Length: 484
Image (cartoon, rainbow, N blue to C red):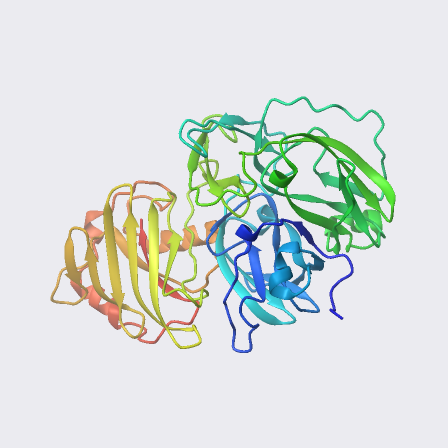
């Protein structure tokens, strides 16, 4: 008998292609291929809008997640996942937790997933927002270029419930003249007349319901995951464990206008008509694309969206609506990879890699080197670190320099910033950079910056830097080259 919650998160994604086995194994860890965190994933990096932390675990009493080493958050666990039958021997293995990434905040973050207290996934990702946790009254519709194939031009439109863009077509969605209503339950997505695409989320809240179900186009009811924390329902319900959600691949339902009905303990509380737009396949793989959307979220601002395979949608990658950001991802939380890639700076062309030595259990024992590349300009630099984690040698695309009193220093536009914590919000990190980059003519948020000539790093003070604080940095510490 599994100790799973009575109505946990369902995931109507019957897709073997989306079933990525995790082999992260802790000291007392789960047997590999017995659990999977599907979103956010280690390869997705970018997250934005309202989404679902989701995946599956074969056998557990509880599944929890922690963001940035914060408190453990209980997910709804135990709903049907037909695609786990072969691995688990049964199907009630899905878990999920609805989350608004805007509430977490801009920048780099880490998420850990645990089954019965044992960690089975640890991923780093970057959250991008448009300057607020939940934006209202925005309107934007754009035609994409050459996606998913050359010559294709699908349309995307801003969706307020998703806080993101969805694919859309010119479809007429009929009104529902007499929909049911309730003061103690609400379907938040989809809504009447909304557009849906990709892997989405049926979500809302219901007070005191033991079972929340939905039916699409009159088909058999699907049980949602219910009972997750929704602090915003305290006033209405008198408690907070009222959230429900169901992950669904809208591509499986198909293009066109559809109807969804929602029931709380067999009492209908919502009936909405909505439109689905697909790209012609149930789950597209191997695609990459970034598209720039002009004058969004306001005139004169631009927003770049990037294709996300787990979400089968475009997500916000960066925007000029907020100040340039610096993202730092940990190289040591992925126990499988020696080399991790992260985004540093306001543009995605800036890529920072960190190489670390690891023991047989996959735990990092030493940070060895850093490498930075700006693919848009074709320039690069790398730094070898000493056993103490301090700079040992510097090399760039213009030549090689060694960090010693007898050799030339790195160019003045580079400084080294020790990041003592993985997570820093963009403001505090910018302030830290501003303090470290006092030799720059302008603050890090002003790009490009011109270094002041009189304040170059000399061989003497470079050597002094290398000899200062000669101890190994903590595990979550990395020495990062930052371009001012």
